[in-house]
Image 1 (tube, rainbow, N blue to C red):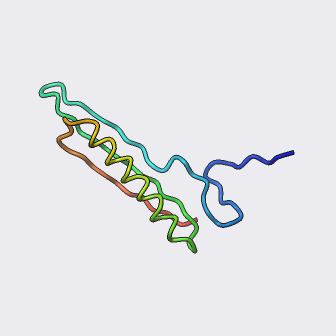
Image 2 (cartoon, helix red, strand yellow):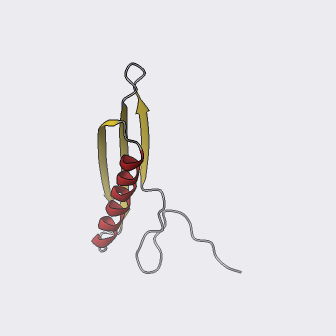
Length: 86
């Protein structure tokens, strides 16, 4: 029987199996239809694998770039990183 990997668990190589590292919220002001983008990240990685932190940050920034390019009326943004060791 095949064992399923748990989300946000550390596999045998020490890498995290996390696919939910950031949450984006796009808010629109009613008065002028301008948009405000908020991104909150929770990066978790093994202390001996700093490249995983970098990889997760790159993934979050690429998603951020995609959203910025798609919505032309974004006037403001807030990007918050929370970084933890496991």
